[in-house]
Image (cartoon, rainbow, N blue to C red; front, side):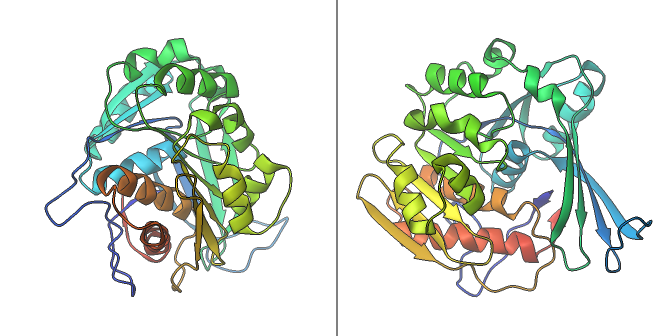
Length: 312
């Protein structure tokens, strides 16, 4: 996924988590995966066992990086904390800086991480391949210097090991709001021990079911997960183009809504934009109604899935 410019939907939301006068919060520290995303979009119906013609694109990626890029595109101050092999560190820092992000990438020996997505001609994800062994070696000690002294919310993805994620939340959660995004069904369980220290969580239906060990309605899953967060925490559970739910532990309220109908261009990464919008609004618009938070997040994700990219 790449950074996308905000677009206006039929609901009137702009995909921006700030007022007309500009972003009003402290800004964000985002910690997690940072690598190159390669996207191959087939130009005809897929045929297994054969070479398929495709259009190719390459851009900055990783769930945490995607959220950081989106927040920076909305003029929020963003610091990114992650790792890179020494040989690619300077290049990745430069790409983050071009996106308006202040980078802290710790050197980490190993193969450069990367992700390749194969999309159908209509933009749906057909298959993804992730080479991310480097992230399995990350410890808090490696990235602590980048996290110390930061202000504003700390946003995590689930790319680093569970022990590292829990250690980050335990050490920094007392002084900062903590937000997290599920990343994938295979990795979301890494957030489990950190849930009591989180103030916001965004997951899709499959990730929610993996955390809960059961699949029920999205509103039931959102309410159940919200009960595991800190007081006042919120949980958003999405389900592609179907009903989504946002639960608030402070009020005990759960609201539901469907995303706007769009002409799909690229569904891969829309959830990251949706998460970024919710996190942005939580920081910059504390009095926003819960239903408006959900509608704004869904609109931002839909805008991404239907709109043009800002390549980084």
